[in-house]
Amino acid sequence: MVEAPLVPKGGYEQYAEYDHERYDRPRRHTRPRTKDRPTYDDAVDGVVVTVDRGRLTTLVNGRTVLAMKARPLGRKGVVVGDRVRLVGDVSGDEGTLARIVEVEERATVLRRTADDDDPVERVIVANADQLVVVTALADPEPRRRLIDRALVAAYDAGMEPLLCLTKSDLADPAGLLAAYRPLGVDAVVSQRDGDLSEVRDRLTGRMSVLVGHSGVGKSTLVNGLVPGADRAIGKVNAVTGRGRHTSTSAVMLELPEHDGATGWIVDTPGIRSFGLAHVQPANLIKAFPDLEELTDACPRGCTHGETEPECGLDEAIEDGRTEAERVESFRRLLASRERAEGD
Picture (tube, rainbow, N blue to C red):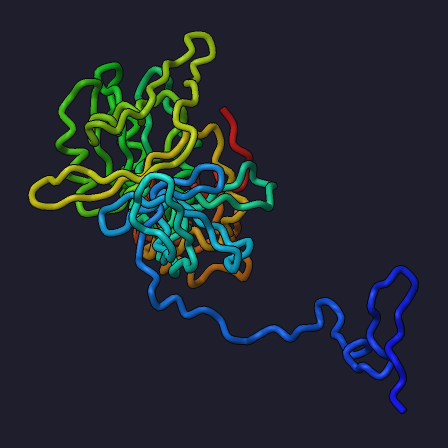
């Protein structure tokens, strides 16, 4: 004889005791996860041109597409210059939002830290091949140590540095050019409302990052190179000699066609310090192959600084295998990594 189902008070039907579903229902979070992952075969290629509070503006086949980072990317950061793959609505129409599902391997990464003892690295831009250090010759005065540290970051990232001296109508660039000539740093000089053809020549066919402290004329330079960029321009405080931050986020802009070619520039917010906690001093000399060859005879642990005993660089100066000015300039860069940034 089959027992009748139990019916509790209140009239709600209850499963019979012999109903196994009552006991075998799986608990929460016990469902096995599939190992299959989306292939994103329909994803399209794009490049990130600016990042603003979690929203990323990308270029996809010449269209501007607003996107967000997909959850599977986790904590992986996406920065200006990243080459990415997107799914979803990539029409670029108003109100649409695509998803970035993959970030391709970066060719170069330009980093900085807030201070030399700050363990947190901040990636400024990816996949650039040239770092343009923009420095005013006057109003405000050049900050040599900041230039040195930007050069160290460029060498560490495997990028080619270019020194861009602005406001040459206010001061003679000869002294600053002479200071970096031994390092072989290429340089261009411009003045306010002047011809930018030489600067444009150095940027064409490249992806360049422009860095410099506030007030050096970086935004003015960008507006001159890219008509319609409308980057905000600030003034230098007459008392402190410092510029006011006008650019609040990095943005990648395409240069107008020049001699049948184009290029890209990344305008970055003005900086007041360039921390190098991520740079290993021992690796800096690798950016100078001719000097690195001269260190084979150095004692183990030699940092190649000016106080190191029996450094191969000193011996090379004595026997004429290299110029003292070049070694001194290299050691200046090395020293800039070993001390905190100052005014």
